[in-house]
Length: 117
Image (cartoon, rainbow, N blue to C red; front, side):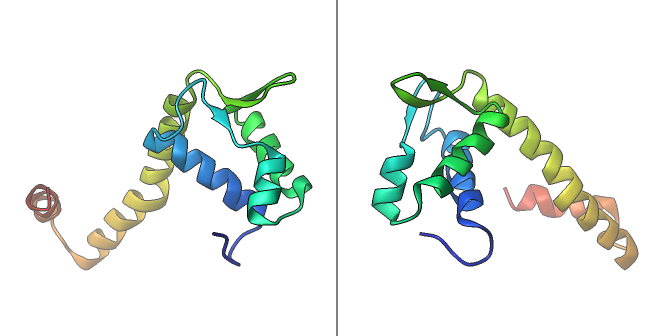
């Protein structure tokens, strides 16, 4: 479930983000409680709470007093917008810079993308 590469609270938040983006969690769906995370994965409840706080700050989930945490309206769209921007900055721009340095023409890159569909 969890690996050693990043803190567990970040891994929990990433899993919830992925579930929202994939549509496994939709607007209004209830998110597993911090107690459920702690019991299911045998982690400190404060660790799960830290993940939830991070997602609340990102406006992806919100708390309903006495009921728990729920996916916020527009969460998937906000998340997709952020990930698209990160994709260009973190993935595509460096790949295009590498292609330029290797002398790969843009037309070859486009052809490769179209063939890979």
